[in-house]
Length: 506
Image (tube, rainbow, N blue to C red; front, side, top):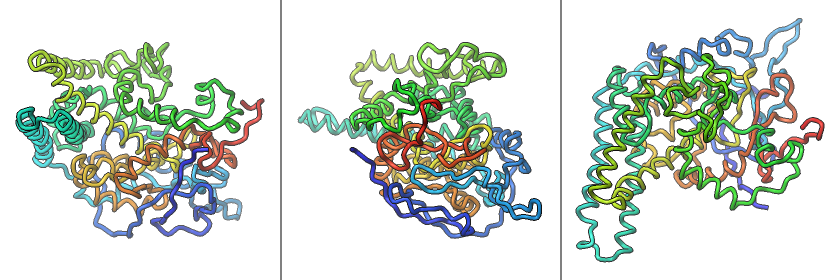
């Protein structure tokens, strides 16, 4: 049986009561690495720059500071007895076998810990980084186009290897430009919404991304991260959905033979090659609860080819009527770039265009999918049904990773500071490291970081997650609200096995 080898080196970053200490005795499935930190005290203040998604989520019925879920880990006095309200959840266990405790902090707690200057955005600095990325792309193209020619490099195989390297390098620079457009979409690029959207539209369109369309759906992802019925990307299958997909009953999953590694590899390759394009065209990894769209746009529509749920149609249930002009503007941006590419292909040849643009474009798509997949898919992560979800819990259900120089410099830290980004998406990337350190004492055990192995560890984590995170289900010891907190399980013998289900239950 092929299994995923888990490494064990865990440091909890904040003191916690013994009664809440996470169990790590399960020898089958230890925890991932967590980066230690030191508590800090800084002059901080609440910022008035909260994005719409943060404020909407903060003020929603499920996330009011005083709601019934806001202090689950604090002992309260009831009928003269000290009672731990966490008992209402039962025994929750992640895929590694560690006890999971429901986060009790609020978004206000997190924001208050961040130094005020971290919220400051500079248009000049943002434009400098965009210029750097564009110049890097242009200089790399000029160097290869001028020097890596048959006249200078007679060997076909050597030239091919060089141009393959070119596609990789351009893919990294292109991903950096993609991240800057992502900053624009979150309004963390500059204080000017007009400048943000102008730069974002140009940069994303150049990479064949529908800027406003994705900006809107991505904002909804931030409003509902980790929510099984509302999240917009990498929503895991439930046990029932996974069983239906492979033509089995749910009670059979615990007894099935493992998925062969070649099937896992094929699925990963397909995801990395075409996942982004398919997602934009079919919403395939987003939620499929479109009948609840408040304007009735989701009636009869579903994810998948021909389901009329995509990022290009103004009538898609991903959007509201007021968004129509923005969706059309995104489509126009794509059409302009497509027209330019067609002209280049006709003038210089389609093979040249493929090497100059489309192979680097596939690298950009690969990195984008890999980064977001690993940010939201990990054996330690919970997912929530509506009864147990709130904004802070969803934001905490993400993972920081490490991709070395490429991640921190070329890709502007999008790999390394994603947890912070889900709590406060308006902080510019160049302040994200400092802000991340500031919130770690607030998150405590709920801050997740898997940095072992650096870039190679990042690549290996894709395989680990693919083999280990096949579906989500409640912990066997869950009670009450705990049944609305789901964790990854798999049929491959990795970590905590699937729960036993009788045929009648399935």
